[in-house]
Image 1 (cartoon, rainbow, N blue to C red):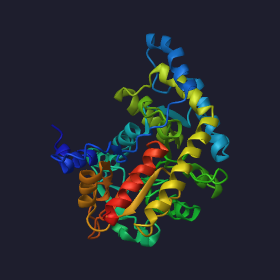
Image 2 (spheres, rainbow, N blue to C red):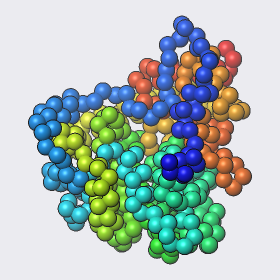
Image 3 (cartoon, rainbow, N blue to C red):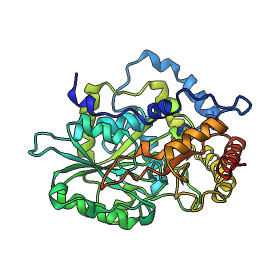
Image 4 (cartoon, rainbow, N blue to C red):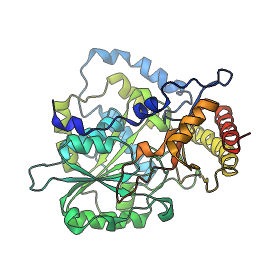
Length: 398
């Protein structure tokens, strides 16, 4: 077996399962699961109809590059959403089976272990665990930049020495962040682009939470948009996006990558051998989803209502609780150990949250996820409010 497999940690939800093993929560309280970021809003009927209407496509092998209709719909969405132009649907975008598989595969295609010292892959900390696994299995060594509330969850680029920056081959960005909800500013991008120019690394920008945000008039800044605003192209820059959160279709496994055509050309070759073509029926449903914005606005309306109801309730017992820049997570500081908090809350009130320490790694002497829990406001409004009330009771002891 690949020896790097032994370096992988259990996934956060496996750690949570082990933490809660043997606990029987109160039978009179139904379970409210806010631990996993799985959207629970209904999938729009028009997407289901597009999927079932294209089942004839199951008789054909799909191409890795995807249909021209899908690529054109993705380009049209990018142009509308980020005010871009000039993206070639033949070379500038590629459909993928969800951002998760693409992020993992991208590291395997980009990292070159033959270039002298062990390559480094940089990630925020806490982070989406795929970044670490992708780095390790590509033969690289992960490096983590702690994102802390005292610095508004911004990157501290000075954490790495110049010698370390010289070894960096890939930098994972998550904006809006998971779990913090932090959105990179234009100045953040300016500084990161300057580092990439100086040291020659590739930027992979995970933007799968980009369509869940509080103000309709202020959507989060994207990497390709930032590059355009700064008068640069997309060299060594690739964005990853997904329909899962935007359109409530996590089971469809549909997303795309866009950016540097030279990198995408090599990534296409990798994916062709990897066997990563998208189901033709899923492609048809994806076209319908990318072409419609009304269901996305309704999705945001529901999340806004949940944040408006839940945030003030929790702020009364957990000072410092605020709504994030974007995304559907609350990142709550716990009174004491995050694992003890999550375990006892489940035991007493049958509410599942994810301990923040499971999303972080010890770097620069601390685990920046320790002392936090991630709350995914994915359940219906009434359930989210009920969960918040139970958390209030748990903390206040009443």
